[in-house]
Image (cartoon, rainbow, N blue to C red; front, side, top):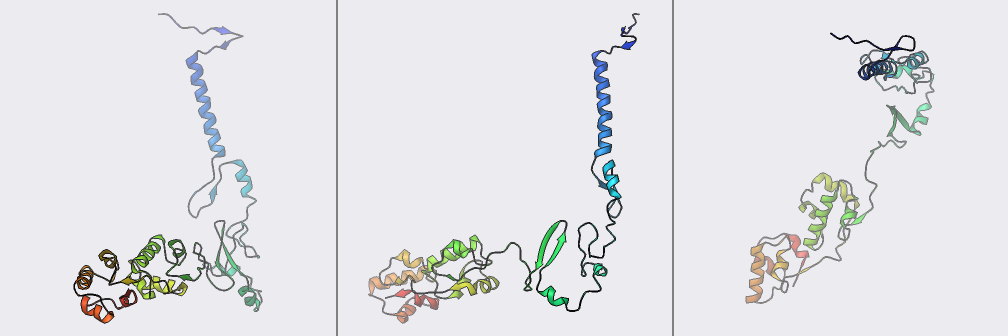
Length: 267
């Protein structure tokens, strides 16, 4: 049986073949990777209340320079940039006991800020109003019968869908003659109505009227206050007996109808 003998050159150094060199390189790479991960992996906590576990030399040295986060300073901070407040779960002990009794007047004229996880928020302004974050700007008074959908969206609690519904219903009516007609718009409720009511101006000069003696069948039927049978009765009457004279005669002809229709019809 033939035996394999290594060639010795350069005073006894072993020459490795290709497979052996690859195995040695792989082993050294794994060792280097393990050492690098052990020395430089990020800081991990042992538990929710436990101390921080440091896994590199710089962090261990820096740990001695950090103040104890549980020990507040006299200036009201805990040494790492977090402010303590008198109303935060018993942290009022850190409040300055030597504070002047008249300092409350100064507090009312300033703005209180809270620091939470590096983000500064302003929950209370100097006039006592709470900050609303992402809210619409204060809307201006809008003429309900001329404002378009983009202007209606500026109203509080009015989105694009509701603005489009208000605009389309106004077009069917010929214009609003009463703010209460907004309740006839799909999705309008008392809360939303009372919210937008202070910002609406109602002008009825440009109301589009219906000529009950001359308008076509489909024009009359398009109005939301007229039903199919009522429009049919109007058309049949004027074709057979002549013109409708007034509101009283119209009511006798078509029966029960929304009283606001009187503002839309002409004879």
